[in-house]
Length: 115
Image (cartoon, rainbow, N blue to C red; front, side):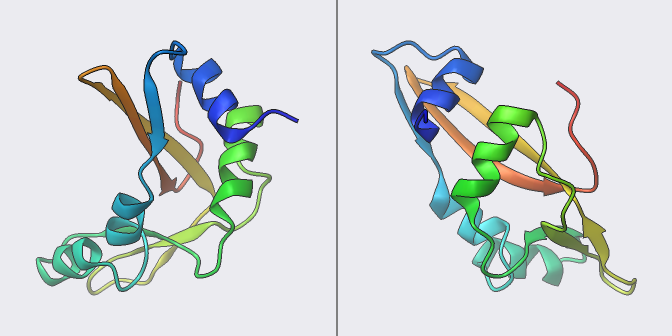
């Protein structure tokens, strides 16, 4: 079975000499209830997309790299100020190459992201 790093390298087209990492700190801050960025954005009246508590990010990432989407299950919710929460079933992987280093994170979405 390929490692998550191998899958990420293949999908992103990263060379072996380029560093690559999943930005878990960003996800904790922005995409989990209680993260500082999530709290700040809600306080400013912005919607936030958060993962379900206890979700296995490694398993979710593997599903997205291999199939393009998670296996039809609830992955999180969009919390909206003054409106009901919306269930999220999709995941987008956002990646950036900066100074020869790949950084990526998972982002819960309402549906599968277009490639």
